[in-house]
Length: 190
Image (cartoon, rainbow, N blue to C red; front, side):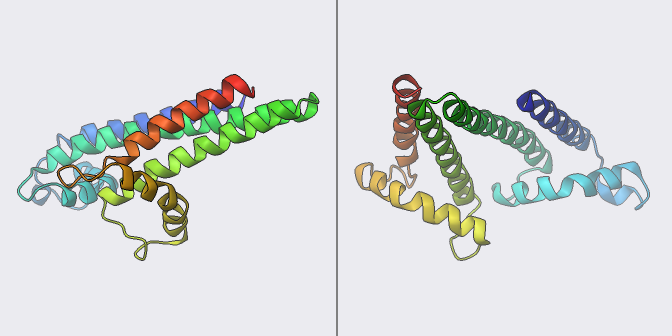
């Protein structure tokens, strides 16, 4: 019951954000309009999403490219949020089912499944933070928590897979193994 409502809310928010960003593609230069125009207000609404992305792109990149990247980012964030919510709710309801049904093994499996799902999401957040060049000391408590939780595991995988072309590909192996772990938990304990 909770997931369809949450899914609908996330879909409507993502659709609204994408529609605003698509409309942003058609904004003429801002200097042509006063502060009361619809175009000006639309650019002010979408600036918090578009401008940080534009600053990460190579110098000279048109703003419209940042808008397109922002559209993909909104869709990816909605997808990951729904995926996490689905896995966590599956773990919570599975845990409650195991406890109320007198099946502690099932409850343990559901709890582990939810924990692995949350950890996978923290790794995704950590990767995104590294793209944004947000460091451990430059962030708030959540960012520090994300680094503290993910760094011990990621450092092990960095020791296994060296940097390739300056890129850290160790999370790929970690995602693969976490997927296998989730499948094993679900098939053995649940």
